[in-house]
Length: 282
Image (tube, rainbow, N blue to C red):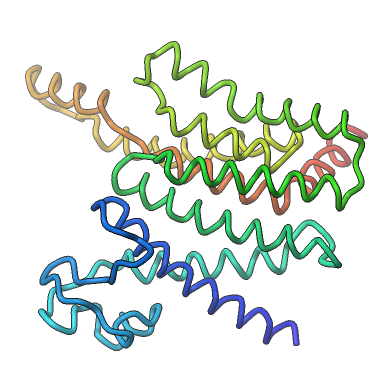
């Protein structure tokens, strides 16, 4: 039964992955993402239902548009598969017992995954975390936190204190960096995303873990990119051009923040408990 449910959730995730791609494309182009119809980016032909089956359509059409034959990006099936996998992992690893009202927490988290999928696509393509997605994510996170407050029967002072500290940890540093550098070091979308992350995690220690994971992943990505841009042997003029190029490298940090949030939300408390038991109580 669990396998069947997981397969169903995976297919739902694929569908939402396809929806997220269409939503992002329409939002970027200023089209109505609710009523507008999907079309080929090349020939602008309106796509039919058979063209929109997640992953399957891409495979059957051999990665090409059925109307003009232009090669389609591998990004499309990859994004759909990523959302499907994220849905299944969330279902199997959800940190709260799925009884009664806790299902509302799962639904809110899956909705957040769809929004974060859109943010990840935006940042990977255009180095942007748009407010029109960040603000709804903050709203979903706040609704999730309120629901958790009643389900977990927490005390109000503790819930408010932990959530506030969590937001300060996940967003405060980015806000300070943004203000000090006037937006040159980090964008405003990152610290606003940090507000949503802090509300979701609702624990300053788990928020710190989320930032630590994001920083490690970002460093692992940025170092090879930076090293590959540095010259080995070159003239003074070309070296200065290369150095200028390296200094202006732009790294989309949003995807790493999103991955850090997802890992910390699903496994953060288990990771902290393991670390405490292994290293702090020797």
